Amino acid sequence: MLNQTPIWKYILVIFMLGLCGLYALPNLYGEDHAVQISSGRDTTVSQSLADDVKQSLDQANINYKNVEFEDERILVRLPDSDTQLVVREKLDDKLGDDYFVAMNLAPDTPDWLDELGGTPMKLGLDLRGGVHFLMEVDMNSAIDTSVGGIVDEFRDRLREEKLRYRTVRQAGQAVDIIFRDAEVLDSAQFFLRNNYPDMSFDERDDLTLRATFSEQRLAEIRDYAVKQNITIIRNRVNQLGVAEPLVQKQGQDRIVVQLPGIQDTAKAKEILNATATLNFRLVDQDGDVRDALSGRIPAGSELLYSRDGQPVLLKKQIMLEGSHIIDASNSLDENGFPQVNINLDGKGGSKMSNVSKENVGKPMATVFIEYKATDERGPDGKLIFEKKEEVINVATIQTQLGSSFRITGIDSAGEARDLALLLRAGALIAPIQIVEERTVGPSLGKENIELGMQAITYGLIAVLLFMLVYYRVFGIVANVALIANVVMIVGVMSMIPGATLTLPGMAGIVLTVGMAVDANVLIFERIREEIRDGRSPQQAIHFGYDNAFSTILDANITTFIAGMILFAVGTGPIKGFSITLMIGIVTSMFTAIIVTRVLVNLIWGGKRVKKLAI
Image (cartoon, rainbow, N blue to C red; front, side, top):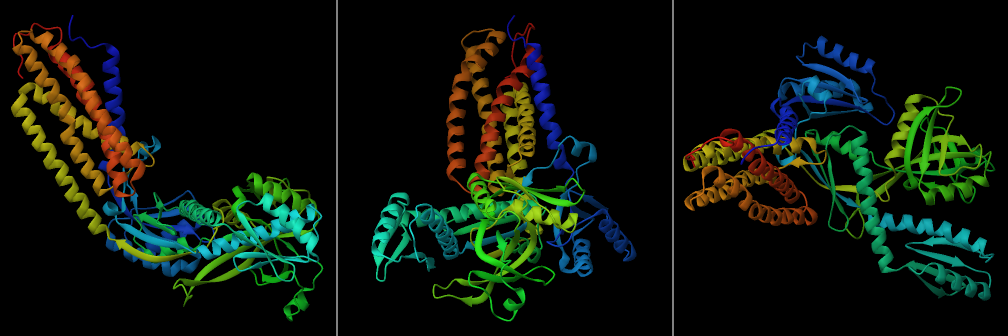
């Protein structure tokens, strides 16, 4: 018999609508104004701190919803934005610079729904409010770092080839290799040209060979510096508890950072400026620290200080840079003392293996390096950065190290956790500077949401009325499918981790609402044609759906391809529009073809129908 729906289709429709409806639910509960407390570099957030915060709020008679300690951060939920400002200022005064205190918005999802993984849609900066930074990478420092690395590499390779040299030194963004005689210089030049095709070598006076990077290699260094910094900034922001950040490249040497929901610009800048570099160096055991303090520092060594102000004499040569670290975690060793477990990439593991093999039993220092912008600018007009170095750990090399090793001798579990955080987040290839910042207030974001919702609502009502008047009972079926389509879009957007709803994304939903009924219009008009051609109502429904399917599929595939191209080449708002457009196309195909067919078959299928209300 025509127009009978198999059981599996009923199950599929119920399952899909139920699943999307469940994950769309969190969007009905809204968000709480909140103040978030995250640990600083030398501090740890704990349950006892959460209890202290709660006690302080009670003593000040401040009304709050809840104080939660989860994922190594404290979240104070508050009833309104005015209370949020008061609590932020109070906690800022109480905790000082030891912790990050920032205003945020926290989903008010019920616990049972939260346990199922239900979260509201991620809103972009234009809807939720937050802070926007445009950051510039110091490319000169990136090139200097690469040149410094090639200096050490030249030394090792020339020693391996038994090519004796007087010295290898960095000369700006070039490397000067000074030899004792012309014959060795010629041999070294031949060897280096064959092994380093991306560098140029020029003979200079007094037996000096100058090596410089080619333009192509310099372009690669600049591109790598931006990409590496993007990855590390994203990791740092995620590690510090800032939810759903947007970090992406803009132009040749700039990075856009958007933190939706964060209203505290000063604290957001502190989080971003916490990014730094790390490296491992040997302690100079031959030199005397007392002599170094009086100004007599041995050649090839450098005097630095630890966190507690103790002087440490280190070798200038870097054993390993933090950019080679791919993972780090804190744990306890076999004696119950804190330690940090480190995993390196292939190149870093090979380098650490070679260096540690020759230095077993010697102390190795982990150096934390921070770049801070000064008020001075160079000849190129860019800010000059001040470099600050600090020894955060000294441990003895017990055995030859490889791609995986551990750092022991750490004073506390909190210090091990902080060190693992810094190592895991990686090291910046070059310092960065905030060149532009702006804040989008929550009131403006709220206004954008209200206007966007009005556009969606008005568009939806207009389409519902048109379908109801023009197609009567079949219009009711199409309207049910259209509402189901909107629910599915919201549910899918909430389920996809990387999907963010922006103002252009809301425009995509409005467009999808209009497009969603296109398929039903094609089907219903085809059914009318079949009826005019003399077919029975059951035959008209059957052939109407079957014959319209190929046309609907072709039209939606071409639009979906356009959406994929927008997503691939677009950035920011364009991506937001393309995501909602593509999701809307898929869900509208499902609701317009499968859901409406199930409803039509449920109402008219298998029955003696003399006339269709269409």
